[in-house]
Length: 165
Image (cartoon, rainbow, N blue to C red; front, side, top):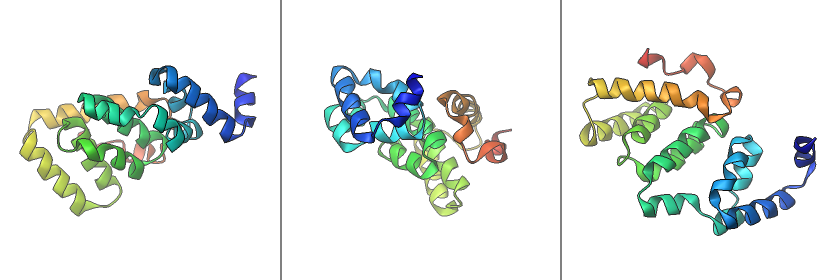
């Protein structure tokens, strides 16, 4: 019943709710982020982010892991292009995010860009033939289904990090 009511509410009302919730603590927005594409998009509305800009807070606090996870979750909800944009500020600082961005660019057919990101990864983190790269692939394979929207992932099993297998 509650889900039906929320889906019928106009975006402006939900945005106002998000602003009030986000003002108290940005942690409360997590359920809206995981609720699907609409919730994710509404949380990222400029008027909501003005009140609780999680990305800037994470960057200034040095919490690249939170931004990395947000970028990975975006891949399952908004798609790879949006995910790449979210991950951009922490490439090449965060190994998993750098690796994920390179993989996503390969999936989009942007081989030259992917090659540059892989080179950044190799320069800052580990050799591309090392065990660490295999561990990162396993980490991504484990994490992606846990972002609560695998049914929205248009890439499905066909590109589920086959090169890691």
